Length: 133
Image (cartoon, rainbow, N blue to C red; front, side):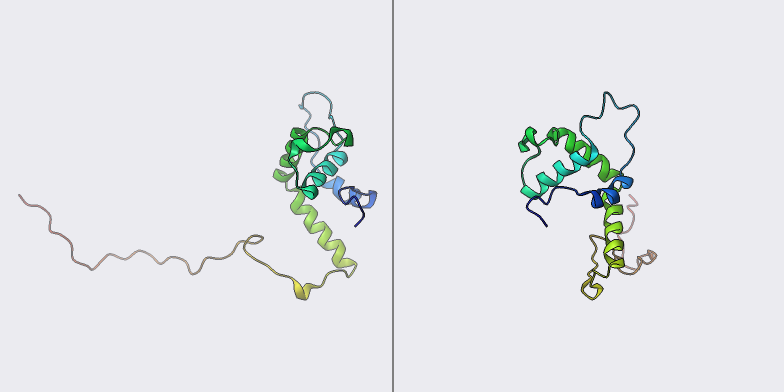
């Protein structure tokens, strides 16, 4: 990792770009910031743990609201889940993963919550008699 880990190089961008949803046709106005620059802005904010609005405009990554909206759109489109799978496959193919140290938990896969609930049985306990007055 270099001194600017938020910069997306050409090789990584070649993996990411096909996963991004197409730009909406009914979107008002031109796309203000390229997807690649917007992603780099998102990574900058996450890496430096700053608020969206604190990213300096002179870096060319666009406005905080633009980055946040694009991140939200990509998240809803499943881009990051697919990217995770693609990167795991690439690393596995290169022999760079040690699967003996893999861990699975309920935050990534649905965990079964025990046996199915049995059918409700009629209670055999005593009940108050109905009022006959």
